[in-house]
Length: 134
Image 1 (cartoon, rainbow, N blue to C red):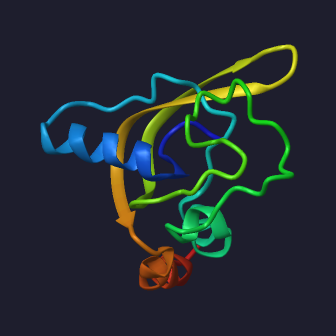
Image 2 (cartoon, rainbow, N blue to C red):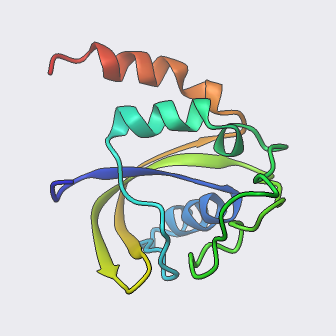
């Protein structure tokens, strides 16, 4: 992806950390890198709505899912419930590192924070995004 604003979907723990930082007027940067890469705004709004884990607070990561060791995301545990409020978050920039087995990302400079209990709350926002001329 090009540099500039990028979006990602976050679970309850990271959503809460971002909310606290924003409320305190502090910058936010995920200090623990994640394997989840950046996306376009419309794509992340859509993903938040159709992927069960980010979409609903009672959804669980599939017990047979591929391992997530080293992702840096404490919620990225097989069988873990998302819980709480998730969010679609826009970031001004990102960093990445390529290791022998994976690519890890860090995101910085929150430019948009769209929290949700249930991701269908983003439907109007997704429709508006898709209606923009390309």
